[in-house]
Length: 403
Image (cartoon, rainbow, N blue to C red; front, side):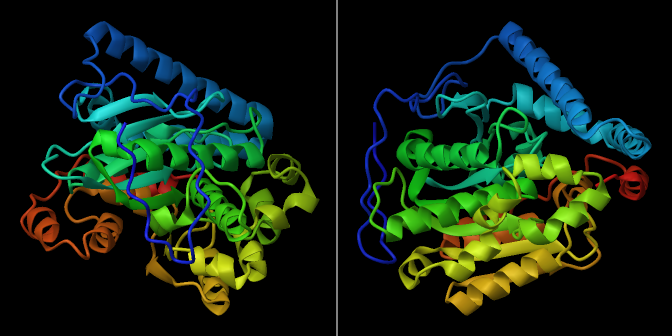
């Protein structure tokens, strides 16, 4: 198997250790024609997979309700969520059809030994040269995160010549935050080791997360920087990540406990997810960043935080404060704020509108910054994405959204 080129180190040479050859790090089932990877699935297999995925999503919903308790607040939230989903259903159906039946989507690739250690790969149609890669960790309040939540983003970025690997991971109560961070790190290691076999460029790997996924990905990145700066053996190097993109994330868990409690993620449940109040600093990237050595800071890639100013699920101040802390520590960090945008506007409603999506445009502009050919092909002359949901549905869903 082709191995990625040695990354240009930002601070010395990392002590990279090869993954265990017994780990399931070889490409699995997928459509043929993608660099010779996998095989084409049958219609029966696709239908069976769709049924299994539907069952899992339903099961996650019941786990969420059982974990949080069914009080009046959560009954109202659930009803709002159902109405929200019904309003946007025309778009979700079209994205779902793409997810299950497109030959450009490789579903449920195994990256580790733990339950839910699977990822989906979205492959561009043009594979004439190695493509940039985004490792995307989805959100879901640490309870209902699921790899298919990244289908719309995966499709939009793949249309712009970027491979997207959407990572699934253990959720609560199947696992706690340390398990989630471990799974994310394992997935990053898998991508660094194998992405060349999927047509990816191992020298252009980006890490991205949304909401809880942004928090998990940031924890994995900083944890790896600490290990690497201390000379510990590692399975992937922070220097292999060109940029980190955090979308609508929370980075100081101590400051968010009461906020989440008021929003319905009750304190007792949240502290169980985070392994107790004493563990909150350990899993707060903002607090960790204040204690990083100069060696660890020097390893970090560019960190770009995206956030809507109308986000009431996680306030945009979370991103602004984290960026300020990183810059004071000597890291390269910046914030891109979207005026008036809510927690779901940037990630769901805006892409469903079609046309130019602000988040996608901002991410692509960074990834294609040094590639004039890609900018001309995908950014300047690419067709505009079609609208998937009518505007009245989107506006009404926005008002009803429980997020």
